[in-house]
Length: 217
Image (cartoon, rainbow, N blue to C red):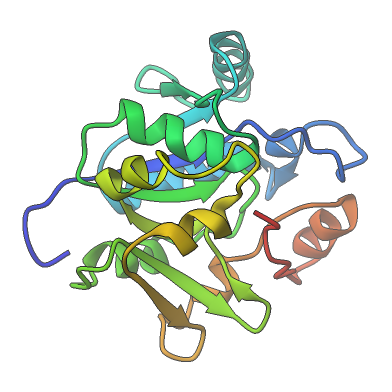
């Protein structure tokens, strides 16, 4: 960003991997590394700080730390936040992060995005937009889990949203949202948006291809 406003990277790790038939997709491997570890490394490199990992409860946070440590990922600087129990799904994670973090801005992403790109993330961080949210837009719509959000705007919107609202509803409730199209964003953006929902998605990435399916929330 063009001034000294603070930003914190947030990685949502509370999903149930219901469409992934081979266990917890956050620990499926791409290039020999767990996807979650790759995402954390990218976010940390882009923001120059450790990411805030959002989980359903502290027990899952401890489990994640143990598993990452067992895979050789450095865990001494891992920080966890817990989902806001007033909301379902990813919105609960975003609200939980907004309640715990003290940065003015949050860069929010998912634990299932193994091709997340440092340059693409930094582009969002450095853009001088003053909108409450800056998010990519593809042919399938907005991609809320590769976006920069004003933390106080998230908290304000949370006062009016129902428990079942998703991230698209959050975007709809913010005062200002700026979309970034694939054509006008950084050249690595489309690849950076790739996420893993199924074993087939994972295989395509490991075979050198990619998928770009939009997160449903």
